[in-house]
Length: 85
Length: 85
Image (spheres, each protein chain N blue to C red):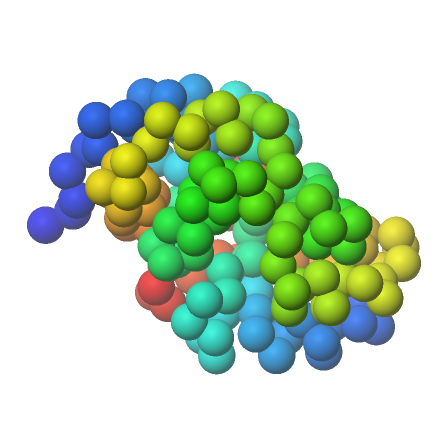
């Protein structure tokens, strides 16, 4: 069964879309179909500052490890869309 | 026409695949169909250390701005594969 919608998805969806196809923010990457292990590592790096990105640092700051895992699983399970460059 | 194969592609393909579907390295993200502007920004951040990742710092270090643009265009033009989680 596809993963349940994470509680914190709304915050991410603003730029990345609920389905991980990022059409609302030109700079935001597509997340759909990305590897969960990579998404998880990236979120940890934003949270702990190993990636120097003010917006994502603010977004990831309040996330728990469980939030991060849920969001990584959710976006990894989405279908990438080639059509939205 | 699809972009020409970048001169430096081989170095990236080792982990990310020539087509951006990263099957050889469990931690390496898929790059196929990602936004070129995002891939470009990420490579600049690896090159200048704003992303603290030893391997990618070493990979991106020698890249010129032109190399970075070519690699970003190349991978953005590839077709993402949902099948390779």
